[in-house]
Length: 258
Image 1 (cartoon, one colour):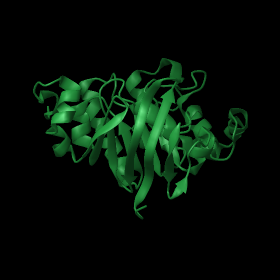
Image 2 (cartoon, one colour):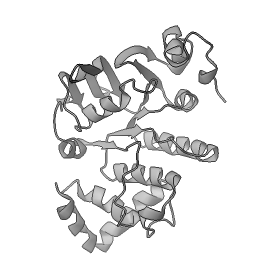
Image 3 (cartoon, rainbow, N blue to C red):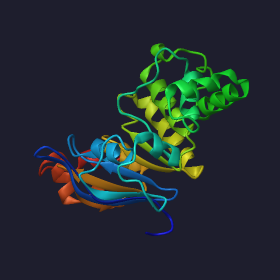
Image 4 (cartoon, one colour):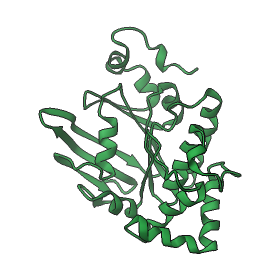
């Protein structure tokens, strides 16, 4: 494994009965890189995320993080090692405020249960830490607001704040731009770039190919559970197999910058 590789996936396969959701997929994420994991609906992208983050165990294959094998470890252990994750469907603790949601994630670095992590609320110093994470994703003023009433764009940033509270070396972003208004997309792209500038590698799933092309350093394309392409955005844009996977044998307008 190269010295600057943060995550390496080797020949990853996941079967559900007779269905191969992921088949013999290999790729790596380098230190300080934004890597896009893209593909049509049902390509196996989220299954890959679930395997990397420990939600699912692979049928075969290996996963390495910072040179250590993490294949099949439970999610809380993988999070403690330094992999943070967001979800396409946001899942805040709706009975808690924004800062309390972040502090639960921050407490998970020390405690393995939700009940134990809630004990950290007694500290005003830790509340200040939670505020800082919220402010770092541009949500100043939302700290005391219950998450049940927050709009989607705010919740997506809050999910990133929760993931950052784990002090990750690698951040997995699952469709963070999904459902956002046009004016929300560019600021979120800038936020993700700023996270990378802090030395955190990013692996993201993104269905919006224009966003992925503009944001990612490299891209891995899946189709029907298999890797069909890997390379720089300009290489992916002109790859006939990728274009066919998305659009049939038509044009490549979906991949052009807006």
